[in-house]
Length: 109
Length: 152
Figure (tube, each protein chain N blue to C red):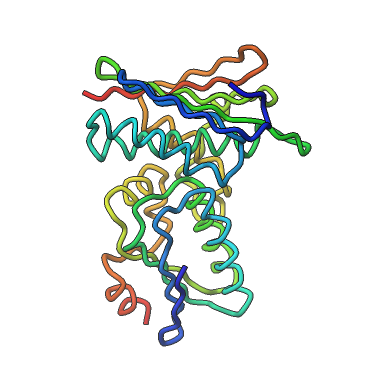
């Protein structure tokens, strides 16, 4: 998973298949970023075709930690299927979701 | 068929669009279980949106079985079969672990804010929302979960 730092914002390019198997690696990477002091995280989903509850779980856990430490998390470029899973799970109101990475970066500054 | 935990992989395919696989219940095998399901759906020409919903339901069921069926270091198998017939997709997932009926879990409260939302507990709920019927039975010391999705 590619992680880039841009103007104090950590941009995480999410995995193509965000299931229980890949979730372990994503969670470890995000936890490492939090331990290193990341406080603004943008998860870009433009390359993600699939998400399961294991992926949602990692996002919620990360959002909770950032909220506690005064940081923030935003998401961008959710494909229709990923969006449907978010909607069904009641996750849409819990996150700031942008149409594209560019819009998210502008909104997070 | 092989005994649980032997590590053997058996793939059975036939022209009536039933695909089946049995392999050790481990997370690194999740993709193989999903691939068998997807190739079964694709060979029946099922549209992408419906296939994605079935994919999610099968993933959640398999993940649950892999994570919770076998505990205390006991290894075992998971078996999946996918059948398409008369406009209905039927996917059966079986494990030989301890008795666990996922359909008895209470539904999550989706109205809680981020601080109150518990982490986890969404898998079974998504499975229910994305399919038409779920059935559980305990048979011959195994858990059998059947996922049914109407294709028309």
